[in-house]
Image (cartoon, rainbow, N blue to C red; front, side, top):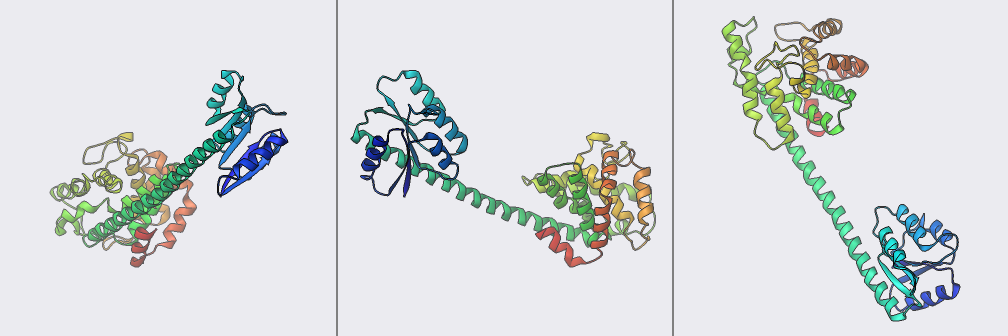
Length: 357
C-alpha cells in the first residue's frame, strides 16, 4: 500500500484528487487543507509521495518542502508541487533546489496527474528496493568481516600458544598484559577499533622467540654477551614471521614484535628508536608487558610485589617507558587490580577470552 500525502487549502481539490487517485491500485490518500496540520502528521508518519499546492495560508509550498526535508533528511520521498501556469520560473527553480521532483500546472490535467503519480511511485519503490538491498549487503559484509576477524584471532591464539611452549611467559600473563594494554589505550581515548586491535595483537609480540635456541631462551642464569646478542634477534625474527600481511591485526602485531624492546630514551634494541618514533601501540604494550612480567612468578625468579613493580614503572618513566603511558596506567589502577586478580593461571580462560572476547 502506497500512502500519498495531499496538501491543498481548497477542499474541492482535495476531494477531486482523492477520487482520481482511486484509479491507481493500492493507494491510500491522506488529505490536509492546513499545511501545518500536514506537517504535524509527518512528524510521526512517512508518506511515499507528496502532492503539494504552492499557494497556501500560513506557509507556502516552498516552506513546506523545506520543513519536510528537515524531517526526512536521509529519505528520497518524491514531491510534486502544483503551481499556476503563470507562476514565475524562479519559484520552480527554488522548488527544485529544495527537493521537489516534479510539477503540475493548475488546473490539473487528470491524465497527467495519474501518469506522474504512477511514475514517481515506481521511482519510490525502486529507491526502497535499493535501500533494502544496500542494508542487506551491509549485514552480509559485516558477517563476512566478523568471520575473517574470528579466524585472525584464532590464528593469533595459536601463534601465541606456539610461543608458550618455548617460553615460561605463558597463559594468563598474555591475557593480563593484553587487557592492561586495552585499558591504557582506552584511557588515552584511542578509538574502540584500535583498542581491540591492541588487545588482539599484543599476545604475539614475542612470537620471534620460537627461533631462539632453548639453551638461551630457558637458561636460568644471566646470559653472556654472545647469548644476549642471539636473544635480541627474536625481535627481528618475530617481525619476519608476521610482516607482509594485508591483515591489520597481523601488521600491528609485526610492528609490536619488531619494536617491543625499544626504550623511550633510545637505549633499546634493535633500532634504538626514541620517544614518539616508537609506535604508540608498542609504547602502550611496554608498560603492560613489563608490569605483568615483574608481578608474575618465573621458574628462576619470584614475583615482585605490586608496590615494587609500580616503583619500577615510575622510576623508569621517561627512560624505559613513555611517561604518558605510565601516568595513564596509574589513572586506571583500580581496573588494573581487577584484571590482576581475575586472570590467575587458568589456561582455558586464555582460549575463551582471546578468541571469543
